[in-house]
Length: 355
Image (cartoon, one colour):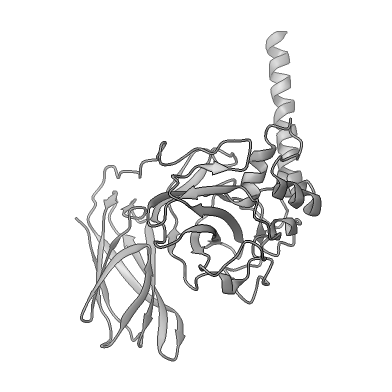
């Protein structure tokens, strides 16, 4: 009898969990997630509510104000700050003053746009390495772009696009992940270097653009550059510190590694510059560990910024080596790096080699 009761309870619990997910997840969206390290406003406010017996009752004053304006769904659905029609769009699509809510149309997150100095913050060190973590409540391929506020930004005014540096300081495409999908314990992760020369309060702004749909997520993570090492203050919950509990990058196993290709395409073009993307594909049947791409650019070209790789430009020869997070590729898997350049794109030919 006890065993039957247990099975029945488990079945009921499963039904309840399914109903909760259906109720919580918007019908227009099939992927969900939010920045966990450094924690987004919605994630840290949810953590601040964890100790309130399931009620959306954070102790942080800014989180309380956000819930008062946006309602309790903004806590329960901390992973759903999204636009189903986003398609990666930023300035000109999300209005100024609504960046932290993503101008979301499914749930109301407008309270998270409030200009306040008491949001929960993650303490960081400028120029230091960090392991970003982004919850994968639902897993999908895509690119994560991270921006930082300019030194002129002030937390006393709502965030505008002009407050952010114009290009991301890092981007990760299809990074590795750990933990289960549909859980707070599941996340994507990638290693990056924080911008140097920053001090005081800032916002790390993240955009997750899915590559298999137009769905795009927008997150504000309040940080303070004060020599910290990932500590979070302003909430009653705790956040795992990736500097003390790192997730190792995966290692390849088996097969015939060593073969890769690099394919160039122009993704934007203007009078005296362009943006490009290069797809690196493992054409072997086994894991590939590390890659190097070389190409000859038009004379006079300069690289303004490059993400998802480490590059050198000698004359017209561009050499790009994998970043730490995308050097490992399974058989037939691919990754991308991108760059913004001054000059004309032309049709450069890129080659790829692997150790």
